[in-house]
Length: 276
Ligand SMILES: C[S@@+](CC[C@H](N)C(=O)[O-])C[C@H]1O[C@@H](n2cnc3c(N)ncnc32)[C@H](O)[C@@H]1O
Image (cartoon, rainbow, N blue to C red; front, side, top):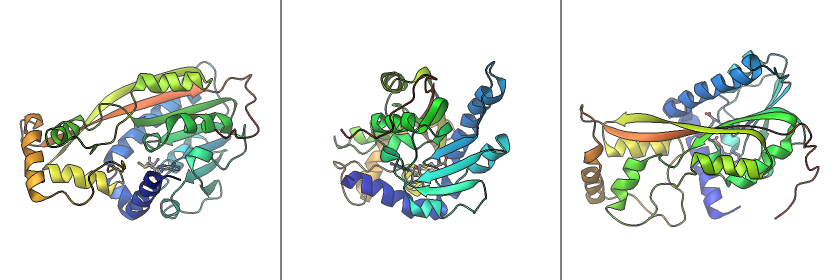
């Protein structure tokens, strides 16, 4: 595991207890992702039987209840690499919590009907995780996930770019590139689309605090270390001004990318994980 990877895990573990109070965007993304699952599971011409669900990067388990309501006869594996996140989940007879990394999922090949993942992929190496997801899915199994797109936090990135050229804001993959990656992994029926969600804050500090509270601050190895000084914060605020809303608030744009794909019915998958 790289240093960066350790830092991401540590940041989420630290945020676990207050995660739900602050994760407004995640909750919204979750609702929207569930609507898409509904379409495939209940409205599309070819209805699906969903018995085994994997919620990958499940966090505090927000998706568990709505997923079990929709699929009451299913078994669900709630998977996350943070034990502190998993510790927030109440025991349930249909749910097994599993501490595992999305880059090497501890799960049998060809065992999952629905792989659901809300806002985890942006912390990962997309290609490796998509390969793992495909291994986990049964032939004909369905993937529905959200991640962050390239326009996410463009205001903050712009403001920082006026101060120095360090990578203060994470880079996110464009929706088209994600679709391309899924197609290259051999997924069928790939659809990637995105929408912008804007949140508003009273100050630039509030924008940055919120990202930290949900474990979403920058963990890039090249980033400037240490606290942002009052002088830099003032500069940052000055460069953020051009984005302020009519009522004087500071907007932060999040591009929510949805990826929907199927594992081919003919694809029996790889029984063993291939090491690069
Ligand atoms: C933004 S939270 C989303 C949590 C949940 N899906 C939700 O909708 O509230 C991202 C979650 O992904 C987990 N995560 C990030 N990278 C991971 C990885 N490589 N393997 C497993 N879990 C990971 C984090 O621990 C965190 O719980």
